[in-house]
Length: 253
Length: 253
DNA sequence: CGACTGATTGAGATTGTTCAAGTTCGGTGG
DNA sequence: CCACCGAACTTGAACAATCTCAATCAGTCG
Image 1 (tube, rainbow over the protein chains, first blue to last red):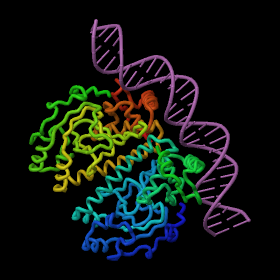
Image 2 (cartoon, rainbow over the protein chains, first blue to last red; image 1 turned 120 degrees about the horizontal axis):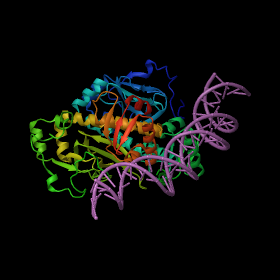
Image 3 (tube, chains in turn blue, green, purple, yellow; image 1 turned 45 degrees about the horizontal axis):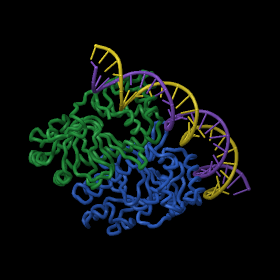
Image 4 (cartoon, rainbow over the protein chains, first blue to last red; image 1 turned 60 degrees about the horizontal axis):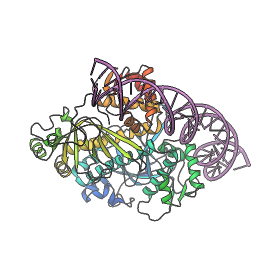
C-alpha cells in the first residue's frame, strides 16, 4: 500500500518496535492532537487523565496497518491523534467495501462489542492513543461528558453512514467521485474558506473505488473528466487541487 | 401507498382524530408491545413509567404516513409498538434512498438533534408511543439502563447501516434482492427455526427498489427469477414464502 | 537502468435502466 | 356475485452505464 508524500515512515509494516510504543505522559497526553478539546481527552479532568495515562500507549503506525480485524476480538480502542483510518468490510469472495473514514480526534472501535464488525486500517500514517477496553468503558461509566461525546460521535457516524448510503445507492459514478472529493476536502480542513482546496488524498485509487462501490478504472476515468473540465488538478497521483468547490458540489448530485 | 392484508385500517391518512390519540395508562403503558422488556419501557421503573405515561400519547397510523420530515424540527420521539417504519433520504432531483427499516420496539428519531436528518414514514400500519423530546432526554439523563439501551440501539443501527453499505456498493441486483428478503425474514421473526419462512412484505416494490438502489423493474425481474428457481413463492404480490433459507442465503452473496 | 506498483486509457462484454406494453390485484359499484 | 377501474406489478426490447480485460504510461526502488 502506498504512502503519502507527507507521511513519516516508521519502518516496515511488520516491524513495530518498542520505540514506537511508549506510555503517555501527563500532561503530554493527547498533546499531539491539536483539536484535543473536541476529542475524547477534552472531556476528562486531571485525575481521569492521570488514570488514563497509566494505561494508554501512544502508537505510530505507517499507512496500511490493520488496527482491528473483522470478526476479531476488540481488545482496545484507538483515539486518532493524527492521520486517517479506514473502516471496511469484506464479503467471502473478496469483494470489499469501505464503510467509513475516520479522522482525528475520532475514537476507533465498536463500543461495547466483544467482536469488531469491521476491519480498521490506517489509511495514511497515523498516531494513535490506545486505550484498553475495560479502562475506557470504566471512564465512560463515571463521566457524563465523555459519554455524551462518544454518543455524539456514534450518532454522527450513523448520520454519515446513511448519507453515504444515498451516494452508494442513488448516485452515478461521476457524482460518487465528486462526492468523495467533497467529503475529504471538508473533513481534512473543516474551517477553510473560499472556492479552492488543496490536499493529498489519504487513500489509493483502489480504496476510493472500494469506498464508492466502483472499479479503479471508473474512478480514474472520472478523475480525468473532472481534470479536463478544470474542476480539479491532479499532480503526483495523490495531490489534489480543487479549483471550484461550487462546481464540484454541483457535480456531486 | 398500499396497505398490508393484515393491517387495521384506521380511516383516511389525514383523518387522525382524537380517538386515535389518548394518554397512555399505567400499567397499560407499552402493553401493546409484546417485546417491551427488550424495548425502552423495559428499562424504566414504576415511577418513571408513571412520569412517562403523563407525557406520552399512543398513536395508530395507517401505512404511508410521514412521522418526521427531512430537515424538519424533531419535536418528539416515537417508540414503535407494532409495525414497520421506513427511514429515507431524498436528493434535490427526487432520487430517493431508503436508509433503514425500523421494527418494534425501536425508538424512531435522531437523538439530540434539533433537525431530523431523514424522513421517517410508516411502512405498514403502525402503533406508536410518542414521547416529547425533552421528556425522553430527561429520562435518559437519570436512567443508566435506558441510556445504555438507546446507545445500543444506535450502535446496532450503525452496524446495520454499514452492513447495508456493502450490499449497496458491492452486490449485484440478484444478491441485493435476496439480501433484502433475508433481512426482512430475520427481523420480522427473529427466533423462528427451520428452512421456511412466511411473511408479508411490509413495503411496496418501489420501496424495495429505493432500499436496494435499483429500479422497480429490476426488483421485479429478480423476484421472478427467485420464484422460477423455487427459492421463494409469491402470492398476492406481498405474501412471500421462503422455501429454503439456505439457498436464499447463498444467493445473498 | 530495469523491475515493479499504481494509475490511465481503450475496446468489447455485461448489467441494469429506460421506455413501452401487458397483466394482476384489490377495491367499488351495479 | 361479477364487471370494471386504477394502482401496483411484470415482462420485453433497446439503450446506457459500468465492468472486464488488456495494453500502456508514470513514478519509485533497488
